[in-house]
Length: 436
Ligand SMILES: Cc1cc2nc3c(=O)[nH]c(=O)nc-3n(C[C@H](O)[C@H](O)[C@H](O)COP(=O)(O)OP(=O)(O)OC[C@H]3O[C@@H](n4cnc5c(N)ncnc54)[C@H](O)[C@@H]3O)c2cc1C
Image (cartoon, rainbow, N blue to C red; front, side):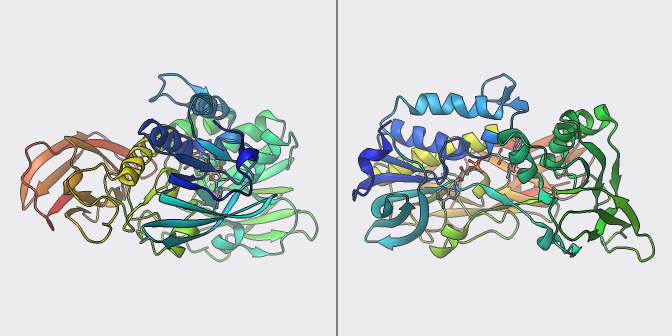
């Protein structure tokens, strides 16, 4: 790990540039270094670790380390390893622009030292995701202090040590909202309830049990916030029941006095940089369409972590970073055979992975036949909550893989290792995923 100051203002060329120093970027930078690449890791904040810095509850790393770690502990494991690599780190540096340049890319970084233009052969986008705001869920009324996202409430409480609300309502039953319901309660705030517009909660079952039931916090599905009251500070919210299409039912509004409305209404992969490069975004995942190497449809551009798709387990985020880092370094060195390395994106020898209507999302969406491993991890979510279900995978109508699930729930991402050994696959083939 080199001192960032040595490189301020210099014009450097790298094999792999990783944008975003959260768990995905940390894993990617370490893996790319291990694979022999000259690696730059860029992070806009002053410290590495991404969102994990503020996730002080435990439960991270059960798959990777077989231990229950807090977010900062999990990140620290990677930061320690990074310290023994040759990766150059630039903190407080914002990647503001990327453009194709020759065979690689030109990256513009904005930092306290000014603007730097760097060259890189490959890029890994590990920019994470952002939270939906009140405006994105059409909450009417004024915008007084006290209306904040769960991530903001988490930042105030865990990083700044300030309690942002005393008596609050949580809208949305996403995991961050559930975790904040418990956290705010432990810090002495009164959480009046978690209100969810859907008929079923969005968070993991274990979070509903550990964060709500254990603390007697009510969860009301089929309800939403229809109005906020207060000019400078929030004074109350109006909660209404909603119908099956999540439309508020007139006449059901109830006013609840509170000084805080905490929103946990979804995460959106952060892909503005990717889009400026023309990276194709999948409508279901809201992240780049990618192959099993985590390469997007633009050759030399890789994506991993929550920028690729919203993950519920950080262990899967790191897994995608590992693979993206390794393959980006190999692509930069053009050591992959056969195939011309970087010069393939939309062209090339690909099969498509397709999912039937019972899937909410599935990735990767493409299989590069020139870089076939014996098995590849495939991640998916089911669209609806389902009991006993069979996952079938077919090529040209012939089933070659199946797995039984006793339960599938949309909030829980499933990982399956798909065996590819001995399969007769041709360019343009479809690998069909079916849930029955
Ligand atoms: C508010 C919030 C709370 C969460 N809490 C939990 C939780 O409690 N438990 C859990 O399992 N998961 C939680 N998650 C999910 C969590 O994001 C993932 O598990 C994991 O941290 C994602 O890792 P990542 O590296 O993909 O993204 P992040 O951890 O978000 O890291 C992305 C990094 O990219 C940097 N970045 C973005 N754009 C640029 C740019 N243009 N230039 C330079 N740097 C850039 C950001 O500053 C950030 O450090 C939470 C997510 C959010 C948004």
